[in-house]
Image (cartoon, rainbow over all chains, first blue to last red; front, side):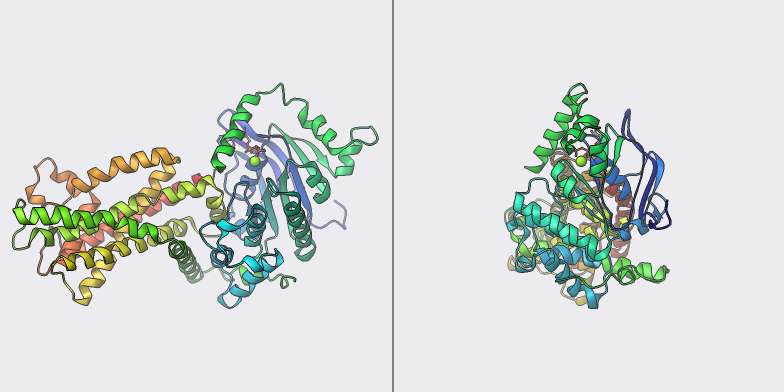
Length: 271
Length: 277
Ligand SMILES: Nc1ncnc2c1ncn2[C@@H]1O[C@H](COP(=O)(O)OP(=O)(O)OP(=O)(O)O)[C@@H](O)[C@H]1O
Ligand SMILES: [Mg+2]
């Protein structure tokens, strides 16, 4: 590493997770720099969510190590939790209470001092453009507003790393643009690093400085969007082509029944 | 609009001492109870619906059995004897399905968000357990008002009322934690509802809620004594009925409820994180 590059804020070494016979994440080694937006790409079942669950201390790794904000995810989970934010793949805001109340509970759980609490809540709502609807019940929010609220919930304690699992899935183009814009401001404002997963190549290209492509648990490519496109060796290659080259070619020949079943289950859960 | 400058120190408490940890845990417990209170305040309809069942038990079952004198309850009228039993029953019924909320939160990503926060697992579970007592206490108000309207004479001395509140908080915490344990084990709504229904009736009938222990066949008595509901009923009867002496002293009943609750909360603290895996 050159003397100018800062110490990574996240590092994994041979990080592995097995579910019985299945190796969902297979010896993943990578690092993320401060204020970097890092993308995890891969087809359904590639191991993206499993990777995020290990890095956010929800799921213990089967082997390998990782540090987040300098803390070991297995030995110092409490410190890791204080340093991160997580926007899960499924909806995580509480529909039964207002936007403000959704933030209030996390302000207290993260131990924001009482005299600062209200200000931090209002700032985070304002930053995400939700001040006007702060006191409305979340069940009346649109999909894009819910996503922005979920991000606001993670801002109050100033995380060093923000993990986002498919942050713009199901959003219309306008809502998606709003999330993208606010994510950009987050990294420039606070030096927060963002690790996100996505199925949208446009999103990967617009937001991410570097991308890792996962396929059946393995990292099959790593680099900036430009580097990945250049690696195909033909001019004018698109990121879609990169994705198909590294991960797509095998999709039809592998057990797609299992993946389809899984995707459908997710759909049922969301009804 | 911009956010104020990063001050991680403000969000990350300083010296990692025991006092700081306790202070943190209390604040986080308050957060969870406050959050649950807000949910209830936005939609209190469940609390009122839940009051229908105890009302029917008191008005129909209680009045009929009081007038036919079928169950000997000493110097107390049957309705008087029944009132604490029905209160305990409604605490059980409203707490035993509390775990359905964890299952719904698991089907969304809500549990994940709580587990990623720096809140000790025991606080997440204990806070939920204490929140459940808000529902239990609302039932108590309804049952007591109704019983009084039916002419049942109940203790009004302040110490007894404090004792009743403590008993209901413990009973609600106990059965709601049991419910969360079942939810963590079965993970789906269908199986959870099945087991909940399967469990409720035996817990209710194998207890002293509607008849005295002395009327029970001898084979049933050990089961009754292993049933936490028996201790809740016994405590409530000792506290609510003037001059009543129960199977055990009230202090023993409350100690049993407390000990069982602590064990269940610790067990669920181990199981709960699996809901996010
Ligand atoms: N709790 C679990 N138990 C057993 N297998 C699991 C579990 N969680 C994930 N898996 C399996 O691990 C593999 C990776 O799943 P993961 O959810 O990480 O994929 P993903 O890349 O996030 O996919 P998607 O794009 O569909 O969200 C899949 O084959 C999945 O079925
Ligand atoms: Mg996923």
